[in-house]
Picture 1 (cartoon, rainbow, N blue to C red):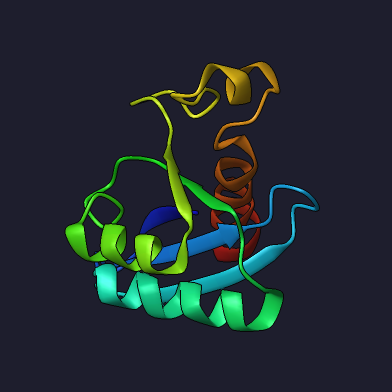
Picture 2: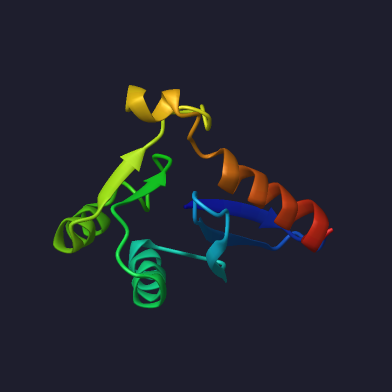
Length: 121
């Protein structure tokens, strides 16, 4: 899961919260608004879980929404691990075994590029 910041030609901006399935690269959720605090993130993840079932983990960067106590409590309540990537390095994770598999945030970062350049432009 990742956030994307977009600025419109008139100077207004918005954020998009994207959730991608690492296995099949399917987009599971897109939330768009001018503000997306942790409760909105949890609500979007609840809808993904209702639709697709309970995941073992979510992978994300160290954004303020992801490191909030509210999201940590939500994840603990649902027995879901939150795996944080290394700062400023979307290809690697803090877990060496995962990094060896070549997994990181590359799928969702590529998806963000597609949304920005193919859809929004």
